Length: 269
Ligand SMILES: N[C@@H](CCC[C@H](N)C(=O)O)C(=O)O
Image (cartoon, rainbow, N blue to C red; front, side, top):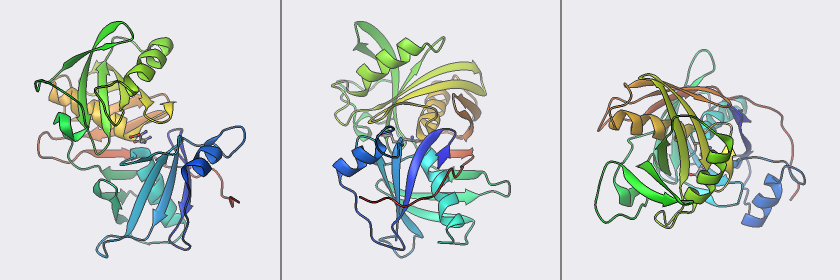
């Protein structure tokens, strides 16, 4: 499946128990020798009986992560297509908490991504003093970032233009910068006007992807918090557009976008 070109293998672990180890995930994610994906998504029965499903996410390098926005929309389409539920509002447990998915009449999915946090220890991000923008030394340059957690950690860097070499070099260096002990997703945000941004995301554990849902949420809330953006923003990613809404402190982020199935198959491990 894919959400704007951010691609996934989605596995039904409700009908049958499934376990993948790190080596198997890395092997399957190989685009030449495996199936190829940015993330592996496992759909499991919930631990909490009040929830509908549990959703686990692994980056292509085999590490388990807290959140995946594009994956969440594919997850909703998957459980409906597979008739694992017939609900249009689906409550899901993730590694980081709860998430609510709403399937719209046109097939798009709105995800309630929860409240963002700008508290450095929530990413985690190591600081001496709490500020709103931080300057970091990366690849012999000083760059400014807004750190934000939307369940998973993001560093949002405002740029005047989006250049391939800059995204690759700064993205790679910042992803594993020493001040992010769990590494970080790096968003390069170009502001077009108060309700539109262009965004490229160098994802932790993957590299640059065509789109990143949590990255779009992080960029938009960082832009709103800094006073650069209004509360409804369209994020133009290389793979397509996402609508992001955030009404400010105390409110959840709402993300709306498409989800697509590409093919179905069986994996022999
Ligand atoms: N592609 C995702 C984010 C997946 C997880 C991320 N790489 C991380 O390590 O936190 C999205 O659409 O949000």
